[in-house]
Length: 248
Image (tube, rainbow, N blue to C red):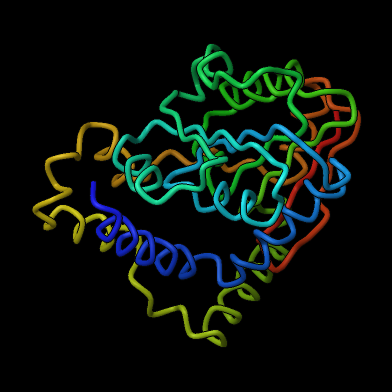
């Protein structure tokens, strides 16, 4: 894949994601701030779960020059976009997070210092998510952190409706409500003669984008504690958009 092609589609990817997360760049910075604080801004091994084309992986490597990042995703097309435009301290690998062996596939010696995720894990079934959290607890060092940035409800209907309204109002204020949406991005990609042959069943599953687990931020936190994390809770919120941190 040519770098110019990858760059063009990554720019469209970022704009598409901001339709749903208007403060996406600030949310990335919060994730980076947590990793920096947890690692004392020193050398660190970080895993990015459900990395897609590596948007968060790239930003981590740019902001933290002593960090080595391994991004994990199942979609070879998204991984290909990221690899064509990647920081040398970022590796993107193909592995299924629902498979308990995904940690070995990273090739990243443990214990890890941090794991991160952005808008990815809400598609895992609760049982698979619990197993993933147990795998993280086994591979993170004591004091290591897991940082999950995603849209998560709090589990109270009226508050959840208000939180959604707050995010949607923010989207209108920053002008991203008319950005290309998820399905339009994938449909346009299928019209690209260079990339359309790379689409496979995994990309088609991503296009469908179904199966959200519906867990609240507090249910995520409880799963993390059950998996072996000492503490878990949100450190940042805007509307229904949260950054949830768990400390091993």
